[in-house]
Length: 127
Picture 1 (tube, rainbow, N blue to C red):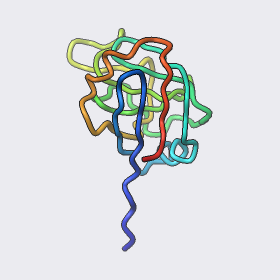
Picture 2 (cartoon, helix red, strand yellow):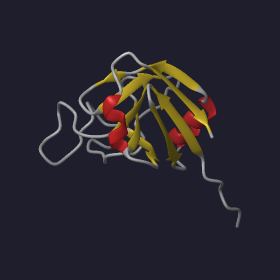
Picture 3 (tube, helix red, strand yellow):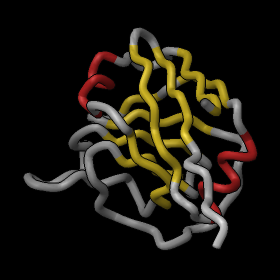
Picture 4 (cartoon, rainbow, N blue to C red):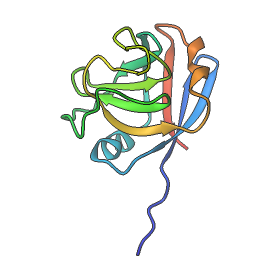
C-alpha cells in the first residue's frame, strides 16, 4: 500500500508564520494545486479569511468548527483560518457565517493569529 505524503503549507501574515497540514479531501486537493496564494485578509471576530481562485461546492460542510481548523467557504470562495469565536458563535462554539469545507489544521498555536489586522497581506505556500 502506498503511503500518502503529508501536505504541509506555510502561512505568513504580518508577524505570524505558522504551518498547517492539509487533509485528503477534494477541497484540500484543489487548494494544494492552487498554491502559492497571496491576498489581503479580512477579519471577522477570531477568524481571518481571503478570497482565493478556487471554486468548490460544499463538501461535507460544517457549521461549527474547531479552533485551528482551516476552512474553505464556498459562498465567498474564501480560505478561512479559525482561531476563536466569530460574531455568530454561541458561548461554547466557533461558527462560520455559513457551512465551510474543513481542509486542514494548524500545527501550532491558533491564538497567534489574534494579532493579524484587517487588510494585511497573507501568503500561503507549500513547505
